[in-house]
Amino acid sequence: MPSVTSPDFAKFVRIKPNLKKDTPQWPNPEESVGVLLTKLGKNNCWEAVGKVSEVSEQLSKEIKEYLANHCERPTAPVRWSVYMLGREKHSANPLIMFSSKEKKAWKMVKKVIEDSDIMEAPAYVAFKTGGANRQPHCDTDLVNYGLEDPTAHPRAHLNTPIRSAIGTTVRVFGSDSDREVPSQATVGTLFKRGNNLLVSTVAHILPSTQTTPLFDKTVGEDEDLEFEIDGESDSDRESDVSLDEDCEFHSVRGTNEKRTRTHADSEILSTQPTRLDEEQLHLLVTEDVVKYSSENGTRTGLDFCLLEVDDTDFEPINQIFPPPGFRDGDVLYSEGFGLPGNEERKILCCSRSSGVLLGTISPTSSFTITPEPSAFQEHWKIHVDGYLYPGDCGSVVVDAETADIYGYVVAGSPGSGVAYIVPGYQIFEDLKEKFDPSIQLATRATLSRNDNGFGTFSAKGWHGPGNRSSDAGSTSLAM
Image (cartoon, rainbow, N blue to C red; front, side):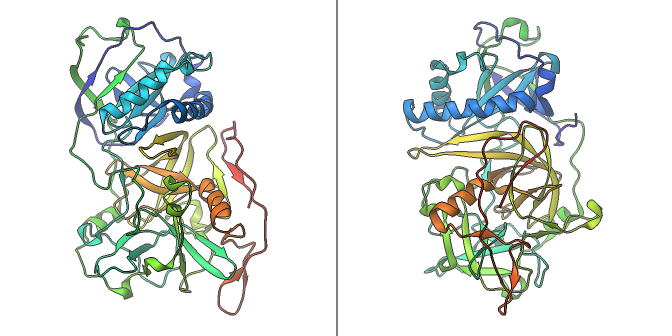
């Protein structure tokens, strides 16, 4: 099983021992062990796949329901996700890890769940619980990848004309703003509403955004990973590790394999600041072209908006041009939404900074509870073979084989290739319900040219996602 590539480094971490009864062994743990992510003390931490991934979906549903009815709102967003933890694959157990930059926030949520009877159910009794200042697969805090000041982060951007709008830069001025520097993100996909063409990006770059963000805007201090893992016995500790509370020891994260920079990375990092030049920008708009924003709906955590455009420099369909050498350069067309299934899948991430990147998507969801009432949001984790940068928020992530849309980048851990995406099917459901039931993806099958260069759509039904597939393949959602 391959490892996620990330730089080697040593960190001091703290583990608080909790000598409660031993956790039962998860049956056939090797079948639920995915890619190696990092080391937590003396244990390896793997991506959870297979049966554990499947069970974790139901566990998270029960946790969300219980927290909604029995938990005070935390003072900061708290995330949780499930991993596999153990010295060896054959002895690994599922671990549900709660995390927040505020220790009291994750401790409160973790305690509420531990004090409930959820984890005593037969399906979950082999799960360990833990807490940390960030999720273990992230080298830094998760931050929004939108840019409020593009000149502070000079990056290369695509010039017009181009073949596809996907992955291009969008810069948004406030409607009544005198600011010379707009916010910046990335075009995700194209939608059609009658004869109107709309492009997607993230809502958190809009000047009028009022919702409490799920992720920070900037990376905080480079803090060590601090975590607690319950349910471990004395026998789980090596003799050279003290069992004193708040003991410290070295933990090496990552592998010996270094992440290599691509040619695109070098160009981006060497780009010098330049003044905004409209001839160089593909989409330079004011906020009054925003036709829909998740800010206006009941699911603000979707972090999504649609901008109406009238530019015909690109084909008004969702087409992706893969990197050289991938599938002989075949053009891919994204014409539906998909679910990852319960095994790791290969993806393409269409970023503005590094072009189309190869990577993988985790089959195990991550969830966030926020200080706002009734605010929960599901995210899916991706790992790309390269880097994502500020301004890459909104980038679409698709299945590398089918081009089905998994979702859109909203945050990441800079320098690690780790990013979080909002599930695309949830966004599309929200658009159908809150915006316009006739809205469609811009696809070949439903597009017929008319005099203005755009197309019209025939109505097709939307079929809900149901449950994730139990096989290794992705699940395509018909459009």
